[in-house]
Length: 419
Image 1 (cartoon, rainbow, N blue to C red):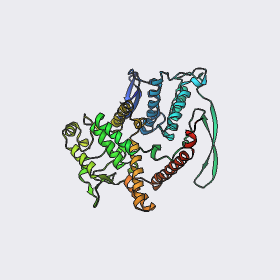
Image 2: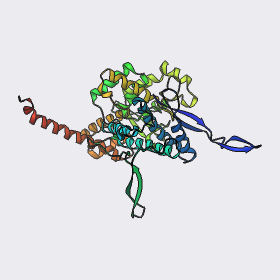
Image 3: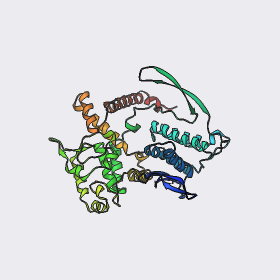
């Protein structure tokens, strides 16, 4: 399967010296960690890799933007290999072209909830941008008709409140960022799982996955902490925890304002409640022989990280995420063993599950306004609107459930009637 690798690239200039052309480094202090796509047969996708370089050198794109684009092209490369299709395959029949087929695949993934609508749009846009660039650079024949272009008018309001119309060129392959008509979406468009599903997932993980992934899943399900924060938890984070009186919970501080600091989305700082039992398991793991051996291989800056790979590296870094690899393996095992909930399961669903259950409990004991504030602080939501999505989700699903039960009671007699 295709993979994303990184190379250290130093920008260079061609100069004439003693009547000879020589390469010189443009900036000795500037080294770019450039993403490159490698096919499963270990050959490089040269055209896409040149596009990544051109975005930085010519278009002056940020490395973050380039990495995002390349991650989308990696997904496309994996799909091409899985379907045994070449990236330049554009037969006369429109429905058989590689881009047309990939568009259909993305829409199906969006409709089944495997990919968020926004990600679907961004992924198709990134692929189209690459093909436009390849055609401009004559890396693919200009005679090939890959899509139909169309002019789209959009209205933009300026800072003075005046509207103006802009005309932009789009293609018939573009996928609108359109929500799917179904139950209300939560964060990142992912839905929670049931209590029985949690038990099945954790049971399978404890038997088939590493103890690190099992503990991470527990943190996701029982604290709602995002994976980016979980992989940045420190031993000091656990040691500096504060007991919450009258409960079996302890508060751990995360965010840039915590000591030690822990990465959070949007840089939000706060205290997250964690069950005492889970905190005890984490403390026990932190001094285990398994973790100490990993710590001995870590650099000084990483030694305080709670979770380290067997080589002493962080689980999640700028270049890769070991968690994604382990989750992919666990999903594959789960599908084989009949754990249906793992089909299309993503780690972030642990957070959606935690927030949904927490808001249910909070609404049982406090007014709506206080419940929203409580969950907002516990989940470190940046805005109350995010927390409100969970309220709407619970209400919508309750009504759907009641309507379904009423429908069944009203018509089950007709279903059972002999025809």
